[in-house]
Image (cartoon, rainbow, N blue to C red; front, side):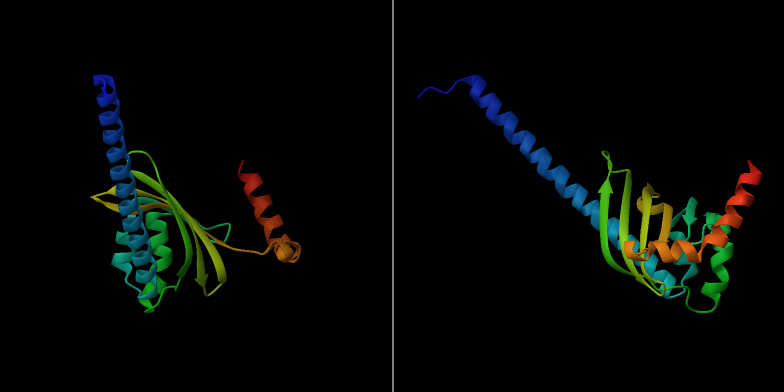
Length: 174
C-alpha cells in the first residue's frame, strides 16, 4: 500500500493540532484551579479578618458592589468601609457552594459566578479577575442576595419605600 506525502503531512498536522489543543485545555484547567484557590483564599481572609490578605487579592483599581443598592465602592472606599469589620476580628464568612469559571482566549482575563453560604443565607457572587503581578486578582465583584422567585412579590413590597426614595434621589442627580 502506497501512502502519499500529503497523507503524512495531514497526519502530522492532525497530531500537532491535537497536542496543542490538549496543552491549551490543560493550561486553562490549571488557570481555573488558580482562580478557584485565590477566590477561596479571599473568602477565608474575610472570615479570618486578615485585612491585608483580603485586599491583597484585589487589584488597586477594583470595584466591589454589595447587596445594598448604594454599595458601589472603589478599592479605597471598600477598604474604608470594611476596616472596622476586620478590626473586630471577623469580617464576614462566605463558604462556596458552587462556582463556574470562564477564561478568555489568551488567559489574561476571567469571569466567574458563585453561590455562597453566608450569614444572609444563599448569596450569589460574580466577578472579573485579571492577571496582575503574576497572579489572578479580583478586578470587579458583585454580591447579591439570592431571592427565590416565589418570594419576589413580598420582597418587592418590603423594599418599595426604600427603592422609591432612592430612585427619586438618583433621578434628581441626572
